[in-house]
Amino acid sequence: MIDRLNLPSSLKTRDADVLVRRATLDDLQAIIELLSDDPISSGRGDVANDEDRPAYAAALTRIIHDPGNELLVVNRDEAIVGTLQLTIIPGMARRGSTRLLVEAVRVASAARSSGIGSALMRWVVERAAIDLEAALVQLTSDAAREDAHRFYRRLGFVDSHVGFKYQVTLPASAAW
Amino acid sequence: MIDRLNLPSSLKTRDADVLVRRATLDDLQAIIELLSDDPISSGRGDVANDEDRPAYAAALTRIIHDPGNELLVVNRDEAIVGTLQLTIIPGMARRGSTRLLVEAVRVASAARSSGIGSALMRWVVERAAIDLEAALVQLTSDAAREDAHRFYRRLGFVDSHVGFKYQVTLPASAAW
Image 1 (cartoon, one colour):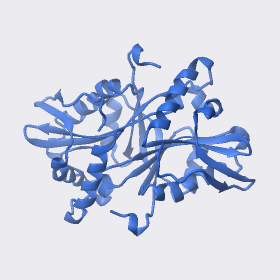
Image 2 (cartoon, rainbow over the protein chains, first blue to last red; image 1 turned 135 degrees about the vertical axis):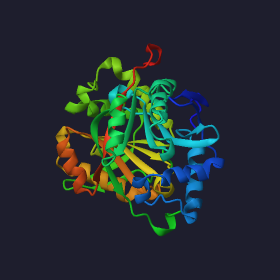
Image 3 (tube, rainbow over the protein chains, first blue to last red; image 1 turned 60 degrees about the vertical axis):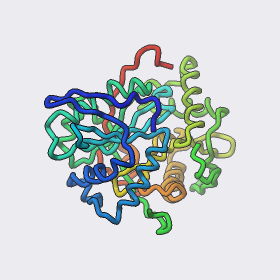
């Protein structure tokens, strides 16, 4: 939990007001389903299998207890229609700038094109980054997500960097 | 400081053994100089100006006290010839995988092509990531750093993502 984030917060979208708030363990199933509701995530193994539930629960517990991380969910009426993770990162580069990293942005397929994603990302750059005194907001997006790239460019993000990933083979005892 | 990192650690390079260890406030000037010893960083304002020293000192203090961040320096004999920052990030995606983010990789211009960078990055993916049970190591590299991209690919990193940045205009009172 990132203490300094001013939450919950109500956001206006074209269709309705939505509420962005901190995720709790009660949101576990809804978040697992949001992750699997995306072809690229499901291709990486996020397919909402029952056997993966303990690993997701452990991860959510770690995020909730981490002072530099926040998992957010977006409620529309009673349903959870979006999620993203924020990580606050102190840094030396750019004259000691603090960065805000955005990961795992997902909007439920049934709620896409309703303005929820842009309301949420605008809240990140216009409100959360200011509250956290973060001079830079950064994220990476899979090269295949061309619609997402247009979306981020429209919001004022600049695709100045190449994002590299390295898959680590962990010893079996370390796997959750 | 990330407790679970096994440091200091001795690394073999082609020319000599080097020592990777946690940065302290005594390393401030050396780190500021390393950041400025790079055309892309200096183009973003990291030019080792005396007036920026308090901002860098505050940033280094924040990193040292942050349980999810570690600033590393590489010593060859008495000189500091490299630096990088690690951030450990719990996450839901990829079945609850923890990620290790690498930022601000710099090797002193006088020490480049000596194998220090690859020894350091191999230590990150083969040792640090295992110690931290991180299934994924990720970084972004400025699109202009083509040599760096070849370097990361040779180490086994895959450039599967696009890295987006958004520059935030902070209120004057929040600037350090």
